[in-house]
Image (cartoon, rainbow, N blue to C red; front, side, top):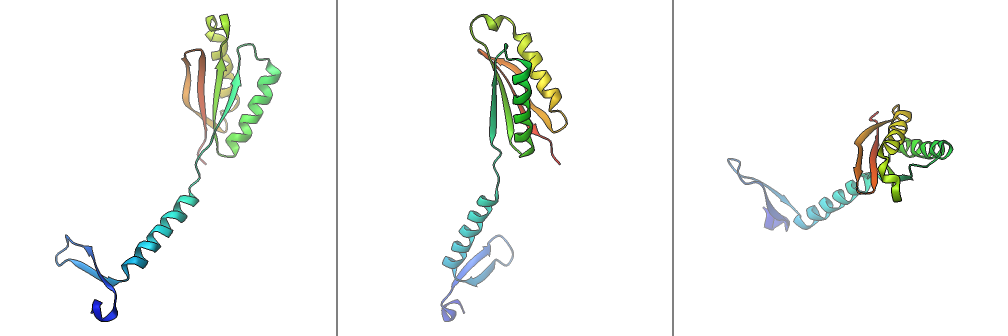
Length: 134
C-alpha cells in the first residue's frame, strides 16, 4: 500500500503487539516536527538577570532609586542580583552590607522572594531576588 501511494511505511510503536505502523511522507513529517520545535523555542521566555551594584557606603537616597529600579525589573519578570562590593578595609564590616541587603529584600518582599540568601563571596556579598509566582 505504501509503495502504491509512493509514501513511507513508518513504525510508530515497535514494542506494541502487533507493532503499530503508519503510511506517511517521512521527510514532510520530520520537517513539520522541526518547525514545531522551533516555534516552541521562540515561545519560551528566558528570565534575564539584572544586577544592582552597591557599596557599604551607599547612601539611603541611592539605595532608594536602586530599589525602585529593581521593583520595575521584578514586575517585568526578571530576576535581580544585588551585589555589595567591598573595597579596601570595608571588608571588615560585612554586617553593614548584610543590613543593606536585608533592607532591600524587606522593601521588595511584596513582589519577590529571596532565591539566593545574602552570602559573602570573596570581596562581594550577593543576593538574588526572583519575582513571585502569580
